[in-house]
Length: 434
Image (cartoon, rainbow, N blue to C red; front, side):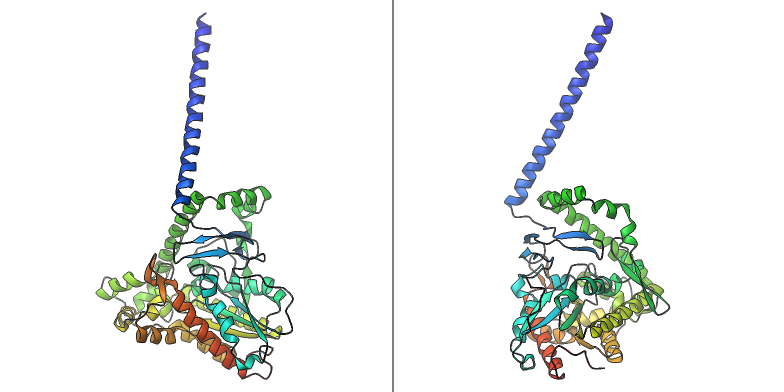
C-alpha cells in the first residue's frame, strides 16, 4: 500500500510538472504572438533581405522585400537575380550602354526609394549625354551592404560579367572600405579577404570552414531562416545584434588605429575630441584621414590598392571601362566649416580628404579614372547650408546619403562619366586611357 501511495505521488508530481511546463510554453508562445502582432501593428520592421553565400559570405536574397524604417524610409525589393534593382535581362541589347555599379550600403541604398538612389539618377542623367550617341543608358546595381573591395572584386568575377557591361563603376566608401579589406581591422570571420604575399594577392576563404557556415548551407537550416526572417521579433533581435557587433568592430578598429592617432596632433579629451566624438559615425574610422603609421592600417591600404589595380586589369581585359568614385563621409561634408576645421585640428591634418586623394593619385599612376565626390559635396553643403547625410529618424548629418546626397551624386557622376566617354572614340567600349 505504501508503495502505491509513493508511486501515486510521484505520478501526480510528474503530471503537475508536465502541466506547468506546457503552461509556460503556451504562455511564451502567446506572448510572442502578441509581440509579433504588436510590432506589425505599430509598423516596426527591420527586413532581413540577406542570405549566406559561399562566394562573398552574404548576398541579397532573390525576391526578398520589406519596409525599411530604421534610417530613412523605403520599401525594399530584391529582384530575381538578387539585386536591389529592377529586373534586367542578362543579354545586353546592341542599343544599350550598360553601367555596372559595385559598392556597399551606399549603393544598396535601402534608406531611400529606388528612384531616389544615385545610380537610378545616374541612368536618367546619362540620357542627355552627347557622348552616348543614341544608345540607351542602363545602370545595373550590384551594391550590397557591408561589402569591401574584396567582395566587390569577387562579385565582378562571378556575377557582373554575365550582364556584359560596357562600364564598371566602383563606389568606394573611404570611411570603412579600407578597413573592410583587413582581417585584422574588420574582425569578421564570415567574409572572404585577400592578403599580399609579396606582390601577389592571395584569396582567404577561411569563412567557409566554420561549422556555422556549413550548417546554414543545409536545406533544413535555410528553410528555418526563411521562416525566422519573416518574423518581426526575429528582425528586432537581429537588428540589436547587428548594432552591438558594429560597435564592437568599431571599438576594435579604434584600438588598432590608436597608434596612428597618437602619432598625429590629436589630443584625447580635448574639446576638439569631444566634438569629433559627437559627430563621427559608428562604423567609420578616424584613422583613415591620416597617413597610416601602424602596421595594420598600412597593410589594409596596400591590399586595398592592390585590389583596385587587379579590378582595373580584369575590367580592361573584358574591353570595358573602369571608374572609381570615392563617396563622402559625413564629417567631410558638414555644412559648417568650423566643425570641419575642428575635426582637422583634432586629427592634426590639413584636410579630411587624405583617403580620397590617395586613391585619386593611385588612379593617375595606374591609368584609371577616379572621381572624388567629397570635395564638391563639401562646397555644395557649405554654400547651400544643407546636410547631405542623415535622416530625421536616425540623426541629420550622419549616416548614409539622404535624397539630396543621392541626387547630387547621381548628377556629378553622370557629368564626369559623360566627359570621360567623350574622350574615347567608342564610348563605353574602350578602357580608360593610361
